[in-house]
Image (cartoon, rainbow over all chains, first blue to last red; front, side):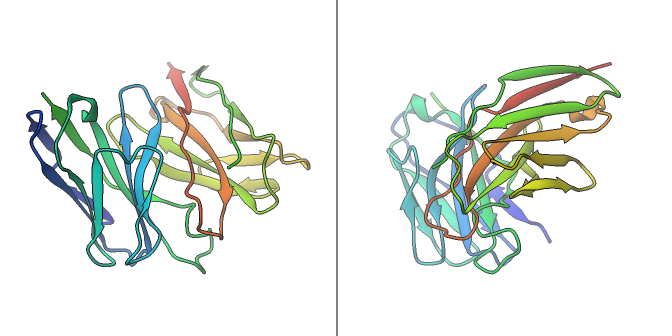
Length: 118
Length: 112
């Protein structure tokens, strides 16, 4: 199993450009998440999808949109990139109800996408 | 959401036991305590989770007192490879309504 995969690994954008970050998981998890991590900071939740067909805002949703394409895939879109969105973006997933540790707790993270907006 | 407070950084020598304490004074009845580890340039990795008393796995131990207002992650005999940021999270394991919040964590530096 690949776990959680993210594409691309690196990206440089100019201010105002748009792009979509892709995330896929092969663990049959119900819940998926997008975080950003700025240098020296903890992770901040952007959006999450508790189950297929639902999405909810996290702590820092402004400037982003998400799509839960199917159970496996959860994409993050920047419509008009700004320098303040320069960050490392992590996607994560976790199992649904009935799992031993609960569906929000044991999250599996992807390798991250390093985004620079000039 | 129960807010957590943990030290910003800690230093330790190789071979020592390291204890990182997390305060969570307003923990709720259904909340579990979970710890993650993050190495540079990687996503966080689940270490251990508990509800009360003591939990131990191959990586760490988690001590939770009876009042559950704090918890201590114990790493036995650390090595240089344990240098990482450690996050303490508190949240309801089964409701699914509110996601967990990662704070800034504790940056552990292991010195040779």
